[in-house]
Image 1 (cartoon, helix red, strand yellow):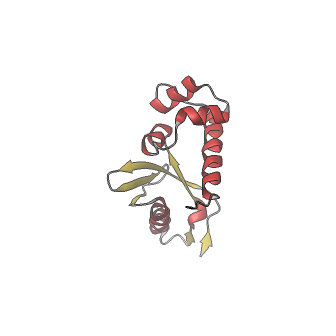
Image 2 (spheres, rainbow, N blue to C red; image 1 turned 45 degrees about the horizontal axis):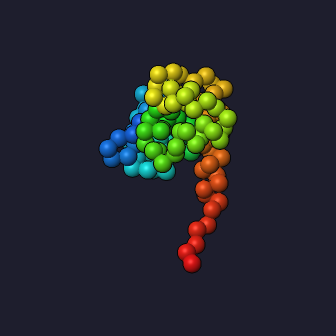
Image 3 (cartoon, rainbow, N blue to C red; image 1 turned 90 degrees about the horizontal axis):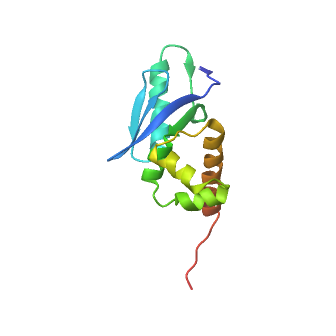
Amino acid sequence: MKRINKKITFIVEKTRTGYSAYSRLDAVATTGETFSELLFNATEAYNLYLEGTGTEVNEKNIKLEIDLKQFFRFYRVINAKFLAKRIGMNESLLSQYVSGRKKPSKKQTRRILIGIQEIGQELSNLHLFVE
């Protein structure tokens, strides 16, 4: 079986029961209760789509994308005002992106994503203790 070396983008949407995702280019869709399950299911669904072609994908080929507005709606724990200060962005501008009144450029989107990922990395490296 030959592996595909390209990224397959799935657009993610939050649902009442978890997440749904659909391929940006192909007729492939799936759901999952968690992001991990969604990634696994997207890989499986895409491999079903490729069945009979002699090719397959793995989780490294799958790229999950979520709309900025949905991201902040779902992850309310991330304070947009704090993030704006952290990444050196005007608070009002980030607020307009979050509300959907303005659409960020690719450069601004990348800047926001890097800031979110840095916070996530810091949190994942923390160890809490109780005295």
